[in-house]
Length: 331
Image (cartoon, rainbow, N blue to C red; front, side, top):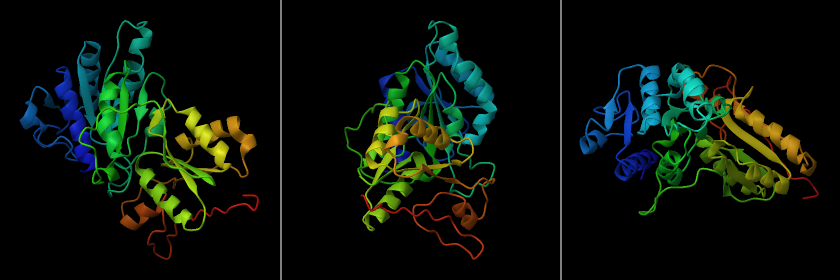
């Protein structure tokens, strides 16, 4: 099935498990959502549980926060991640703080889903990667499912958390296909995952960059370099044990992040690695991030602005940065 269908199954399953669960957002009902994730769900479950909203992100997200505090289990869909900036006050100053400021008297079991990332030629307005911004905020949990299993299984686990959970779905994953077990269910949302074991270097990434990073690791294997690939999955709170354990074994690390380099989540991870496992290293921490420009519209420029697993076709004036990794003689 596709990643898109896995997300739809997760929503359908949560609604069957709990009558308090409902989905709300712009065009999620009759239209089936911008990326067709909820297509057909209104016919299955009715307009009370699949709710089209006005074009007011702050308004309907605030309604979702209130519904969660009152005992409901809302799933709020924000069409694209840049629209979440219209809701930043609601998320940071209300949803993230209610349980803590009330001394635990009120929980906010709210899930906010949003499409994120680059690759659909949506240009500078709709191509942000803001996960690192939200991973900065205490009081919420931030997830980035990059596999069918996580897309299918993280939603129900998110509802078990008393604080709001933000789920970032990379736009380039919706058409990804694969096999999913018929009995696939909830997955834990506390740890990172080792997607490929290795001994020579650790490649740490998440979301839409996972497949590219696995592709790069396969290419490195052809050169005799065994790369370990870490999928962060959970961006807040970070899984320190897995993040530190891998480069402590391989003695080298490169962090791959589609966000802009300055102030990104990759910077925080690099800082923590430097603080905690510096003495294990044979080389400095490396980072591969997007070019620090508003994301271009032309396909070749959009691709050149992003981290890529392998070289991409480019014109004479557009040359993607190449990262070379070599084995030391001692290894």
